[in-house]
Image (cartoon, rainbow, N blue to C red; front, side, top):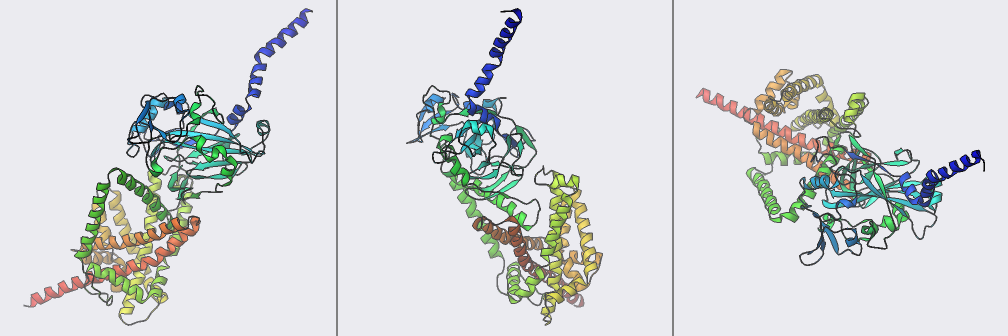
Length: 637
């Protein structure tokens, strides 16, 4: 063999040593190659205020190793007292155990505080995020296969508090072998959300990808997986009952992928925990119980059937602040509040019972302190107690339902106009970033959004009040006019109404913005409540309208504030109840239709509020005139 030939042989041998083995290794483990190829990128809500900031995500998907062989974790068996079977259980200890066992972490799952986050940080350290990949097949669907990606979270800090949380996504192929899957693209994805989930085709614009890797937006606290950054509404068990938040700013996680087998044959296998059928967290009742692991889930054994049962979309809470969106916010808050009360009931049932009784006694005391006897709502200028005002408003509305309902319709175009204004503001680059539900809603954006919404409600209430006052005054004088004529008469004062409203808003706004002037701003806000009535019924103009309203409320500020707060509270209560019932009973209702119905209902209720407010004006005016008459009589003695 010549020198040249020997060199060629040597190079061939070296190539075989350094190149061939990796290629053979990749070919010998196509499952690992497949799960690596489609490993998800995970977006979690950033903790902007650092550790223990519950407005951001406090955890990250991690390895179960942080709870295995951990001397702070104990294994318990269900039974009398749930006795400790072992401290620091490892994978081999969990291998043979069924559902009668559970892991118990330090802390109280129903009162987590920041302990679980601190423990998670201590156990996980600076290790990279981890997801578990499993190639799943279904016996009756041999021509398809799926990759399950399982995310293990140390704690679930949502409406249903519990130790550990197993979440994840799935990628589905219309082929039956690993080799075929590596040579083609997936057909669809499924993202797990609570008891159900959402699906999207691989080529759908809804699915964000980085190369071949799907992007997952994990909801803060609940860890449900979504396709984008938004606030999501859940109204049934498969969606989760409450609101999931994936809004930014977000932190991107590029996790390590650990391949899981279908099952483990030996307790000595490092992945022996896969066979564990017990619970990965503290035992509690209902949705507060620690979850079972991947092997017990339908997604593990019947991935195709599971994905076939997913929804095509999730309900996104609209970014606007119209009546519908406000009720959705109320829904989110009510569900969260209800979950907290359920926790309190489980922990301290006596305390919750005492609070409920005290609230009942407070409401009953208020109801008994006023006079609820029926009085005619007309004439307007007459003394009436708070209870009589509330009942008088109902009686007046019932006597002329069509007229007052038609008056309330003005509230609808105003609500639409507010929605249009907010949409226009969103199209302005800087403001759009602040107001968008897909970006961080900073204080400036929040303040602007709330200001525009509040002004919309004030304007709607203001002009409905002016028209209702005109209508009631005409009916009290025996004129049988309709809503159209009431509109015409009220809007003949449009200039005076507009400039008085503008002046009052500027005065109150300046006081509120000054911070130190907030108490005076609140004082003036109540004192200007009778501006529509003083302009339309007394003919006052400009600053005189503001002064007259203040004069009527002088000495009656607290009484006026309580009645007006009660009236507006009733509108909010009834609108919220209708909205909540719509969300719960008609879970599939589109949010645009939901918002339309809620806004229409608010338009029907607002006239009742303004009727009672007009009667409150009449009571104040009657008291003032009685006082002046008494003063004149005293002066003549």
